[in-house]
Every structure is written in C-alpha cells, then in structure tokens.
Length: 111
Length: 111
Image (cartoon, rainbow over all chains, first blue to last red; front, side, top):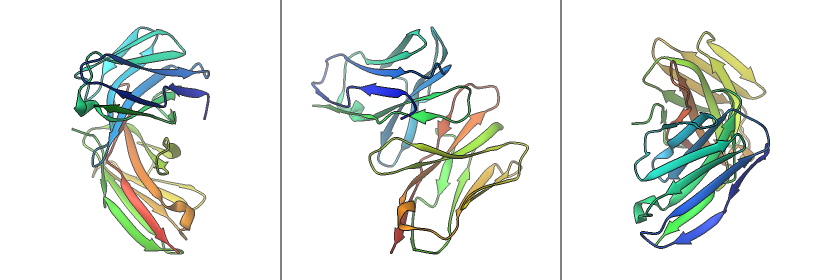
C-alpha cells in the first residue's frame, strides 16, 4: 500500500503502560499523519509532521506524543495508556497537503 | 471539532441508482478531497478538487465545490455493489499544513 507500513497491526495492552506505534514509509514523503478512528467520530487527527523533527498537534493530541527523527519513521507514543485510547490508529503520508496514502491500521485495545 | 461534516451519515440505495453525499466545512481551504474506506481497511483517495474549481469528474464520480457555501458534494453514478463503503471528505485549511477529515457517510448498495 504505497510503501507505508504500520506496526504492530494489533496490540492489547494494560491501562497505565506505555505504548509506541510505528509508521514506516519508503516514499520519502514530507508529510506524515496519525489519526484515530472511532465509531461515530470518523477520523480524528492526533499529530502530524511536515518534516524531520517538525511536528504539530491535531485535534485530539492529549495523552499522545510523537517523534520523527528521520524521514521514513513517525512514532506515536501513548505515555500511559487509558481505556479511552482503545481505537484503530491510522498513519498516512503525503508529498504535500494533497493526496494522502494510508496504512492498514493498528487496532489497539487497552484493558 | 472536526472541519468536515458529511451528510447523510448513512445512505442505502439500489444497485444502478445514483448516490449523492454532501460535505460541509468551516474555514477557507486550499483543496477538498474525497476518500473511500472499505470495512476495516485504510482509506483510499478518490478525487481532489481545488478551491478555484467548481466541478470535477473521474469515471463515475462527480464532485462539486461551492466555496461560498463551504460545501461539496460527491455523486456516484450507476452505483454497483462494490461501491459499498464509507466515504469521507478531507480539507486542507489555508495556512495550516494538515489534512482534516469529516465523520463520513456509510453507503450501502443493495443488489
């Protein structure tokens, strides 16, 4: 799928534990995004990056942090997972703020 | 709150009929895009319309954009069972470097 890989694809974790999701691209695209998808809410933007070490918050950034130390990787970290962070997480990449290519998603369950 | 809001939230039609979905947004934009999501998978880009365009076609898809009303519509003509999916609009706000999605329309095509 357009050279974008999310890992892991599924994860179950306990409340209070840290969790890191990885998005890896082979397209050398400048923009990378993290979204979460929940029933009734569509896709909500968590954080995004417009270059190496350049990141910004989206609409639902509380409880999440990101890092982008190289073009190909964008990491999303839940510092202390809560049940409200149970969701499907999608990473997307784009060369500009134009057509975006999505990963297959990561299903995260916090118990 | 999310930038785009789709209407209706769900739509069910017979195969062969046309399907129309609407998207409203709140701020000035550079472009508006439509995506499709099949159940459980990542989103796939369908079409992009720029703020200075009023209508665009791609195969059986027709998109209109009315910037004065801050709204867009997606028309799928001669629907097929394979068109069953969720459809999302996404906007790129002027001055912002991010892509924001709406809540989506769930389209069901009945054979």
